[in-house]
Each structure stands twice: as structure tokens, then as C-alpha cells.
Amino acid sequence: MKRRIKSGAAMAGAAVIAGLGLTAGPAQAEGEFETEFMAGGCASGYVCGWQDTDYDGDKLVNWRVGGVGTTYEIGRSGDNAISSISNESSRALRLYANDGATGAYFCLGAGADVRNLSGLEPSRNNWIESIRVVSAC
Ligand SMILES: [Ca+2]
Image (tube, rainbow, N blue to C red; front, side):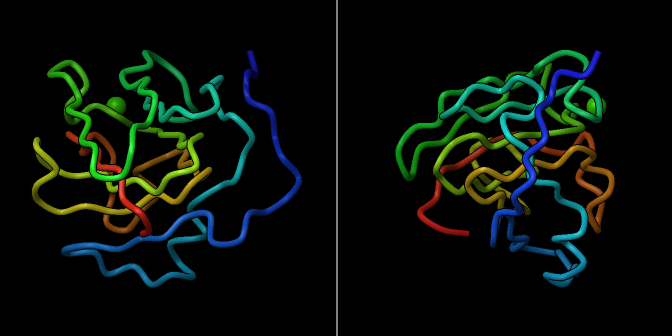
């Protein structure tokens, strides 16, 4: 069953890859993102992460995004298990390899979604462990 609603409008600067150990250029990275409206039924103001690609399987993250500087710890069942993610908040988010917003990260702009994290270069499939709200990517 299709649960997502496609948006015809492309959002400028919807996603930015930045961080340690990432080699993808902006153009390449942007090609891996799709802008969708409330992908996978993620509510406005929330960030959601799913066990499977295409916003499917268990929703392992369903967090109402807090203020800049807030960190969200993904529980053990969700660590290194997220395969798609949707940021339906108005904040930029850094997604980290380790707990406590440590280690390598990449940044997901406000309203940006990634339907298949293995499509990033390098792959970020089954990789995210914590999330920090930032003022900009
Ligand atoms: Ca997974």
C-alpha cells in the first residue's frame, strides 16, 4: 500500500551532506534525495526513521524535533537499523554514527527525506545512532 504523498515541487537546498569522512559532492548527494510531503506518514514537526527502505517496516524513530542543540538518542532496537528517514520538521538535523551525537555525521535539511540510505555515498544504511538539531547544515 502506498502511504506517501508525492510533492511536485522541488525544495531548493532540501538536503546537504556535510561531515567527517564523506566524499560525495553536493550534486551527487542531492541526486539521492527525494523531496516528498510527509513521507511514510511522518507527522509535521517530526523526524521519522524506518527499518526498511521506502519508509516501510517498523518506524524505529518518531521524534517531535526539539530546539537547536537537542540530541535524540535512538534506542538499541533502532541503532544501526534505519534504512530510510524523513525530516518533516523545520530544523536541520545531523545524523550521527554513534550515540551522544558523536562520530561521523551527515546533515539532513528541513523537509528532506532519504528513501534509501544505502544510496548515499558512502552508504548510511543501518548506520544512524543519534540525532542532533542544528541551526543549519
Ligand atoms: Ca534496516
